[in-house]
Amino acid sequence: MNGTARARRLQDEHWRRANRAHFRWKTEAEGFAESEPAPLDDVLRAGRCLEVGCGEGANLRHIPGGERHGVDRSRAKVAFAVRNVAGLRAVVPDAEFLPYAAESFDVVLLRDLLHHVGSRERALSEAWRVLRPGGKLVVLEANVRHPLFFAQALCVPAERGLFRSTPRRLRSELRGLPGATVRVETRQPVALRRLLLHPDWGSPSLGRRPLVRCALSRLERLCARTIPRAA
Image (tube, rainbow, N blue to C red):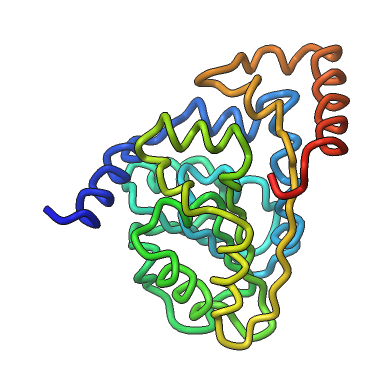
């Protein structure tokens, strides 16, 4: 088995099961779920929207209108998403070979996906192919220069692709798409609530306490002013 096949097998095994707790955390958890739509400004008013790597469908759950489509390699996650996101149409292809005609969608979303695929260039090319002229390709990626994501890449084998994830690389990849007008922004310098309220290594119940929510908001604003933008 070559390196690419081993990496794909690792990803498939790690993300095979649907994670109900994670879905509820991102869509219902007080103190956290309300912050999840913030990076999706360009998607919330979409007409026909596709999310590549939709997982359990939490991002699409936050998009209130329009025609929503999702794809993911995990059959369990796709089945979960269809049951829990009203009106969602989801299938199980590969991000590098999307089963849609060219120019099919107004918006294509890739959130926390590129560092998991075998070929980032191929996944972006496919997303660009199915996007209509004048549409928006929205890519959200973690920045490995951030200490939390660097630690995640060190500790979780399925997250090792984060070592290839930097704003400079993403900007270069997007500029390689034919005819693309590229805007790259850095957001959420330190999402403390994502760490402290996480269902696996934090305590989501803390988000129900007003004082905790207030403290986290203030600390995040402070970090935004003090942490170097590159991180």
